[in-house]
Image (cartoon, rainbow, N blue to C red; front, side, top):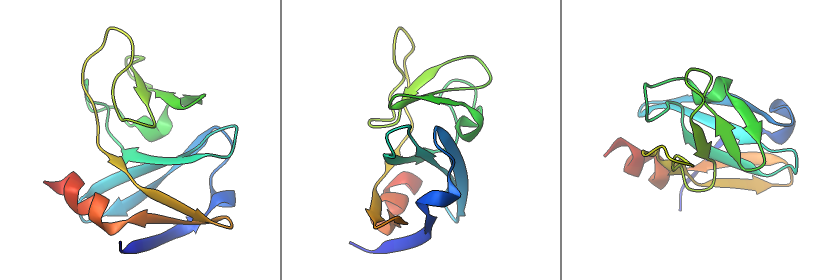
Length: 109
């Protein structure tokens, strides 16, 4: 697997996110209160809202536009809503973060 360095876990606030721009689009990288890191496409499946600006709770994010809740683990909308975004593999090596190049390519397809 080819990994791309994207920064350090300390660059992302607890229960917050940062965006990574790639040729395939923006990726939102989230850090939970438990220091878990997840990456998904930065657009809500509902109306394209910026998920990176949403509220992180447990292993989910709530879209700031229409309150859709998206699982950071699966990329799927939770509750009665339907839709999903692609997830991107993240590697955390002693606080240094990497995303999988293959995941980005799959996200572009």
